[in-house]
Length: 112
Length: 397
Figure (cartoon, rainbow over the protein chains, first blue to last red):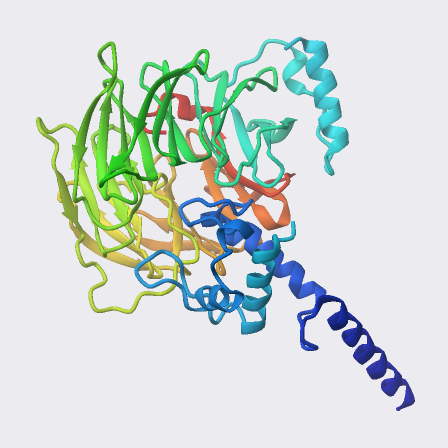
């Protein structure tokens, strides 16, 4: 019992530590999911937007090309797609947290 | 490049990479190129040169820039590969020496290219600035710039660029919905024939192996556009219009590629857009004659060179699976899971084996197409397109 409590406390404290560093909510993604999303964005979003995200058939996703869009708007485009354009809705593949993490990181300069 | 330098650079390449590459087998002495292939490593800006008889990697060549969505065409002697990178890089590669001959950055963002029937002109399809640029295949010096201008002052992204007999190139304007034919048969600037109103958001195109039929896929509507280049005055015609009328489309997480569209036994197999289906089209009437339900959104449906089978792969998130269609019966006769992101296939020239990139397991697999047995697994970094030298001798590749 005490062991479980300690583990729980450790988990809570490490989550709190992370959130104070990144400003992310306590239910932020774990690092394994972040790696999966990084791979997905570079490789799969990259098939239209370019692996370096400077654009292809789809537009560029670099910080300077996204200055006019709030993270929330980018996340809603990711989840809902763009009707009439090839951008598909990723809802069902990605959660809201996933989409917000991608949107924020696109605006800041996406990790490699 | 001198042989000593080549050995040095390939040794450095092997040391820098995480996989070991055997010392340059191409330096052993005279050899042909007929069984060689170039494999694009999309994430590392490198290509592998492979021997498809020995089923081994000969060497790795680095420094080719951004190779996401890269493709290649070959010189007539099948010694030089022209690699088209996403970043507008055009690289002439000597596959016997395993060395870059010349590299130019010809645009900001590019999607692919083609080589003229006489082997003298290399054309590149560009997104930024939109249009097509044409280069001397020997020197990579510019020959012609064809901005794909439309509207008041816009330039369209171009897609589906192919060569066709008579020193001509055909390509499609994604933003403008037009098909252009550029004729370089005479000295001086090319003659351009514009066809407008060919449909909404044409995303890629193919040309049949005889160089006669050019077919553009449309993303913005259910249908395709066909141009018979043998007609006195070629006219675009809509085909398979409304193939999915009234049906709800599924999300398309990766655009289908049309270059590999299977054309066999008097039929085409075409990936439907937004449907887990292949459309079967009669190759004479261009009418739909059936559909085949498949595992996911098809990306490539590629006919084995004899036309007996077509191999099909799929978009994310179903891209770990391959299905094989028997063309006479139009039945799926084999299905297997080579691994995550099995996105590119290339048949050996007479189809006894198929090479398959499994991007997310960093492997290239070789399969026997009669028994479906796996013959080899080769290491590669995020492999994508595989281009065998037999393409040198085929129209539209």
